[in-house]
Length: 201
Image 1 (cartoon, rainbow, N blue to C red):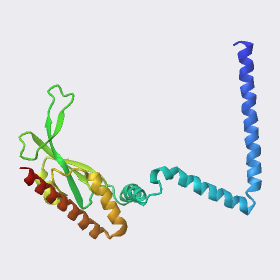
Image 2: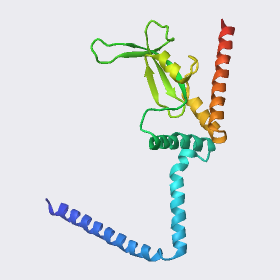
Image 3: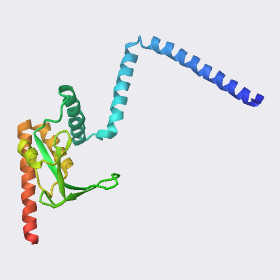
Image 4: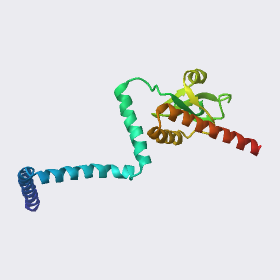
């Protein structure tokens, strides 16, 4: 090591010790100030504002964003606390029929969305829970749809749209009414798609 380098390191050590001593003095002063009720109140308010500011970009002051965030993450933590099993929610949306072609080299199977269960390449249907977003792939699709309430329309696979709408409805309506409103909205849109397809034929 050259003398110039040694002196630079010594300088850094001294600077670090000065910083440490300064922080220790700050801690002593802070403890003394914390005896003052106004200072305590100031720190509490500042911490509250800083905690909110961290989430402000998430919500942007919009009720819809707060509803979505709290139903998404709050609901997941409630579910996690109450059960350790698979999702047992009421409404599922079919997000499509899928085909799988096996790769003979067993490297990458090729998957794609096919027309429906009648497609010659059909392998499984994918379903997504409206509430928590859990996804299930089922080859035994009839059995799955007999055991669960499934909203199904090959023209409507945007679960996120219905989930956001469902959360907005849950904020102002009881769960059973919100569920019925989502079902009605899905079916109303399904009828619109049928009518528009008839007109184009």
